[in-house]
Length: 277
Ligand code: C2E
Ligand code: MG
Ligand code: MG
Ligand code: MG
Image 1 (cartoon, rainbow, N blue to C red):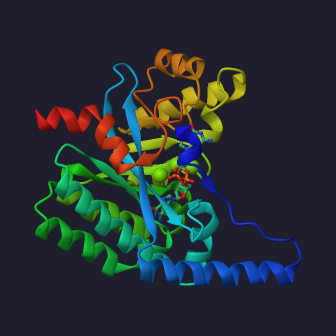
Image 2: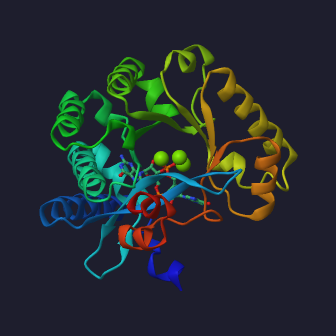
Image 3: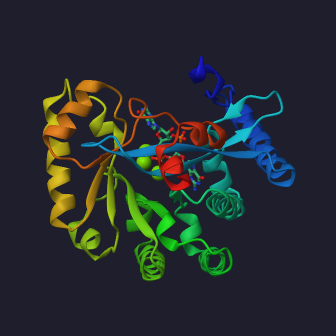
């Protein structure tokens, strides 16, 4: 039931070029309207310490509130926003919203996804720094996720972001690890705290020996680089048991907790409760 309520939909379109263009135009209009009318919402998904089940932080995941009340998944509008110069406004909105949540709920720690395009936007970095100064939120309560692909494509910018935010005391995660052009030389130079093992490797380790070996190797690489591993897409108990046996410290996935609106997280969150007592 809950799954149905928080379900996200994809935008539909036909496959011929004219209607593709039409769909893109509609998506651009939808994003502009959403920015104007504040129609974005953030869902929060827990990241869990696998040995204890403790929630260590949440990841903020954006959705667009469509006119018909349906929630539109980020995969349906973020790529368009990136191509049409709208992503930086969205990333601003996300960061601003997360700071508001952190200010109102002192028990929460939240990680934010930053688009590769926004890495080139110094004003966004300065905005984060200003928020940290002005909002009275401890920097240790916020983290930033940059995908491996984005980090290696814009290495200089990514390194700058990471260094400046690390210096302030924020957490850094390299997202979707294993899907980019993993060069250990570059990875080693990035001051990230976490490597998030891409879900495509994790979700079937209970039935796929190759992926099982890759995930264990990625955990070893993470540790060798002085970083902690977070396994994405923990979808069932047997995957969880294997990750625990491999001493992967953290996990995230539908089996551990689905992305949910803030209100639901606040009623369920041990993290928030422990701070309230
Ligand atoms: P991501 O950062 O790798 O986030 C994980 C995605 O996997 C999320 O999809 C989440 O809902 C989904 N997921 C979590 N657990 C499971 C699981 O067990 N199984 C499966 N199959 N999926 C799971 P979502 O919310 O659709 O986000 C997709 C991507 O969009 C994110 O990937 C991230 O790259 C981007 N994104 C989301 N929110 C934001 C945002 O606020 N700003 C930016 N710039 N990008 C965002
Ligand atoms: Mg992420
Ligand atoms: Mg990811
Ligand atoms: Mg992913």
